[in-house]
Length: 256
Image 1 (cartoon, one colour):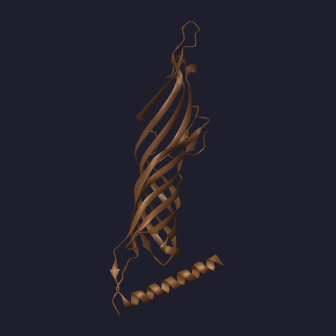
Image 2 (spheres, rainbow, N blue to C red):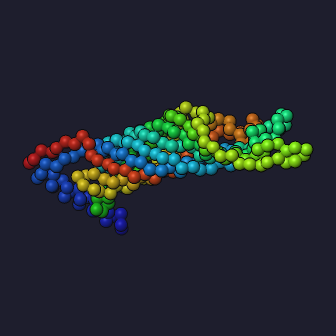
Image 3 (cartoon, rainbow, N blue to C red):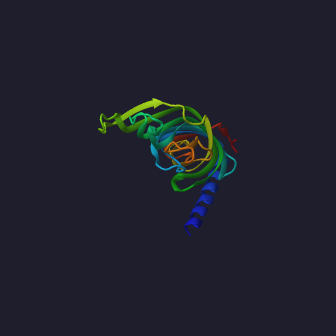
């Protein structure tokens, strides 16, 4: 019943708008330009144990093209702070090294992969009461790595013991640039947008998105540094963003 009411409302709204356009020159556009920014909850997939999340920043510019009343295409590009966290256990004392923090440790690392993320996909949109718009969309994505940073916490023996003493156990924190991940990877995105009307067909946009990794960002990773116990790591993310959308490439209908 609610769907029927909504459908009837959309039809009546369309008819009233069509009558108005027949009397007045109104700007119309199939194109919309959108800019948005927000936060991403990133996480590495669990091909290896002890993976976790971190927080990144995302921003993008999107161009929408309406192919019909409800369907359209879009192209998007922008910055994406991807990644996640990993925990690794290292013990190289069997090779004859002293069990110091360098050769025997537990390291918790939060990796942020700075990337350029681009996609071309399709969307479905509808308009509810008060001209609120709803849009669902999906697309393949292509990410190019621009840089990588690691924030880590390493725990182990800072100094070896003397005459059987255990030594000094300590935790070291630090940040560093790394070169650990692939230069590019493929993925997909699917999301939902809520458009709140502002003025002159402009919208304030709330964007909720899931980004899934299709190809790994790291091959043959082992949480214990053993070749026989390894897996390919992919990065996924849930993002929440706030944006603004405006019509572009408008054309005017003629008066009658």
